[in-house]
Image 1 (cartoon, rainbow, N blue to C red):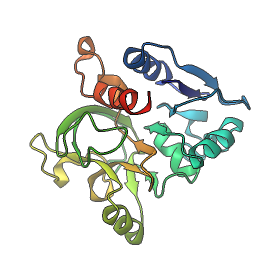
Image 2 (cartoon, rainbow, N blue to C red; image 1 turned 180 degrees about the vertical axis):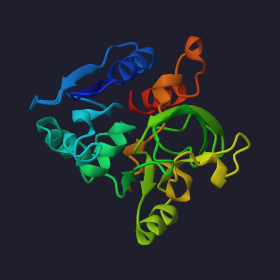
Image 3 (cartoon, rainbow, N blue to C red; image 1 turned 135 degrees about the horizontal axis):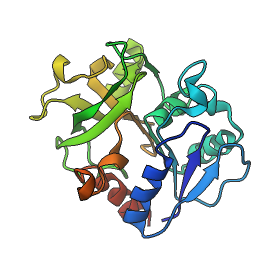
Image 4 (cartoon, rainbow, N blue to C red; image 1 turned 135 degrees about the vertical axis):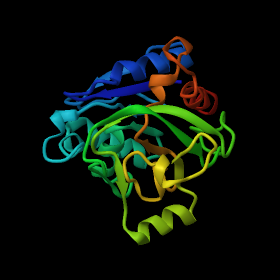
Length: 229
């Protein structure tokens, strides 16, 4: 599987994503600078976490208009899988590849901690290594992570099964107390209609190696290898 990680000024999880991808695939991904105009042949494109362009204007707003994103958008619309993590999720919404937006946390504070997520479906290229309803633990690190969409969009996401992960308690219950940032319907991640684009705020790449404290995130990268090889 050939993967590319897009690097923006302010990215700080691009190397974490590269390490997780190398562990899963056995090969280093291409690290592609945001200002480049050519994207290598890729089975997977990753938009990593961080604070692209210092989060000026809105988180991900400037990055969504960088030269490389024109090619990423074209590849995504042609069916190439694109994974956006944290700031990458924000970029995906700003670029119009996913609906809704990421707003300031309801606490109005930056939150950095491990959270529990419930896997809503396991029939995607990203999740077939998980069980439907499985509870996993991923870290979050964001100030603008509250997912918002209007009622009509939420109804469509729910009705078409496009919610990928929800914030939950350790038992899998979807409760207000388990929601760290005020996201509507406890949404932590969503798919595009074809299931090829996934945006999520928590960081699977940060818990993909036992010495780092857990391997729940590794299943996502192994799922991708098994479906895209």
